[in-house]
Image 1 (cartoon, helix red, strand yellow):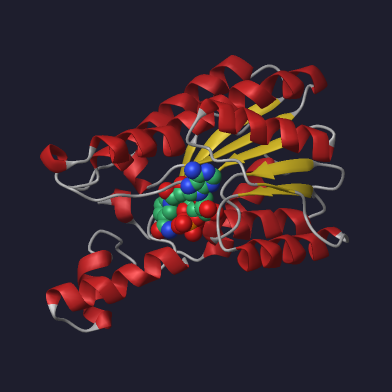
Image 2 (spheres, rainbow, N blue to C red):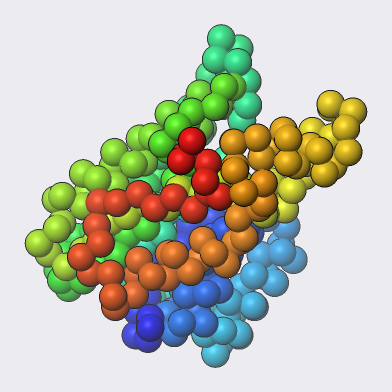
Length: 261
Ligand code: NAD
């Protein structure tokens, strides 16, 4: 469904972004990867996504998205490697947990920059080309924390709420020009980074990993089960495919019932 499309997926060296990049490549898109990681992990991700594209390795930008300059550099590299960018998935993100009065300024700035402002800078850089061609798809990976809050995640919750505001505004500005802009709001998704939290919580509270998962980490996720990466990727694929041209400005929850409560 993405034959002849090009896509840039930020933060795609691991987790959700990697899953989206792989599914998009399998669907026929030429995909550029971005993100940090050990050299061998990046090489493996490039080879795996490249295989799905029928090439030795997928193009990759090592740009740091914590500055506008870094985001613009990534967008320029993507345009050079792919010719143009039809699909932008803003996925890169980080987390930090602390009471608001103790929240380190540098962590606040980094989370706002990477989780929210990078979306703005990438859209600003790539939207003109989409408008020129009369077709574009923007998917922002927000979070259940874009819709509701949890204590100790002030920067993350603020950034993800901001992403939903940006999503709606861009959708309104582009609604008659062949471009859509939507957000996905996952609950807890099974990624290596999220899974280590279970072990840490079990240790911290002196309970089994099963109790740490269902009663602590998944307290608000009614299903008490991880959302799986391919579920999120499939939703992103739908939003970038041929059957969703009228879907814009929306936030799609995929959270095991979290925000239903
Ligand atoms: P992850 O840590 O596995 O992946 C994050 C990616 O972002 C990595 O590729 C990392 O290298 C990249 N990244 C981080 N800082 C960067 C920077 N400064 N510049 C460029 N790349 C950078 O995490 P994930 O769980 O796959 O999360 C992906 C997105 O999904 C994030 O925006 C996160 O907030 C969101 N999300 C995750 C969950 C979950 O439970 N895992 C739930 C809701 C939302």
